[in-house]
Length: 507
Image: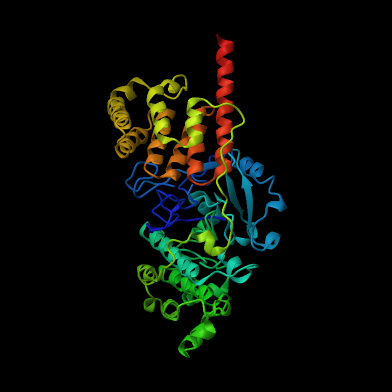
């Protein structure tokens, strides 16, 4: 189950605002990657998080709308994560009968992922598929544990979705589409209730797989004719106006709680039979005025002529004022249990850094990283430069790091992010300590996704560095992924123990 986040959205829990700009959310599960050479292992890229990511306002590169950095996996990695694509781990709505299977898997770093495996026969143009797959990498995404909107609307067991939550879902989808549109991804293919998934908090996410296409120039092979805009049936093209049409069909789902052909729904709306359109399970539990506004919006979205439909920004403007129960978490309105934070009980005694990370004591972590300075960078083998590189780039790069260190010591963490990003962007010299420090800066700026990304990057640079795992533990804890945080804490303390044993033997 893939995901996409959206534009800034005020919510009750600022630490888990899933639809803020993607410095705080896991955005698209695709990446611009080059096709592999013929002698290299096959790779698949995705966001896990790179989690949830980022940023127009300051993500992975410290701001400026930089492209997110994503993790890359070999086919062997994905086979291991999914137990050789075991049928027991299929989470697609139709199980093994689905044309393209989605598997639940777990990476070595304990992160849960969803892996979409495409059937060759389901893609008419294999060559174009290969180009699209390598260009977008829509294979691996963060796993969404609380099912799809379709499941909650059409196949619920204990309770249906209450009215306020349905409005929230509509608003979040419109926010997501609006954000994606402003970032140059105006076309979303096959928007429907199966594309909307719910995360650990019960907040809705938009599947990243809707950004894939399988032919050029905006053409798409629709997988569900019930959601197909009329212009696609005529011309075989999906446009931004087509996305609005599909959004209208999702509004019908939210209003009625069942699949209703758009033409039939429009007949009911013209006949003023709004009550007949509404989900009977909501009787007496929704605002007629609000329902009338949503029905009118759905009617506009479903107009035959694309030019007669509202824009994405119109959707956001109409749905925003309808929000209520803003102080009630999504998981409560959905009636799902939220994983409670378990105390971190490591398997072995912890170092001072480990103790600080287990408490998520960012002040103590900051003090330790300041005192440690760059000792752990020694011997990583990442900083050997040619004479030419020294003369051309080294002075500016080291000056950026020096300013970042000063800002870090002075607790000016936003400035530290900017300076460290300048150092990282040059790319001539790679420092795991800089990634660890920037990770902490992101945590102190309430950007746990970006913090996790940097901690993972520090691990890539220095595979057995305990600090990288400790920082991942803190970021995962901030993301409410408490078991994963504990796993990382234990792994970090184990690496520290091995290091100390090696030092004792060496002495």
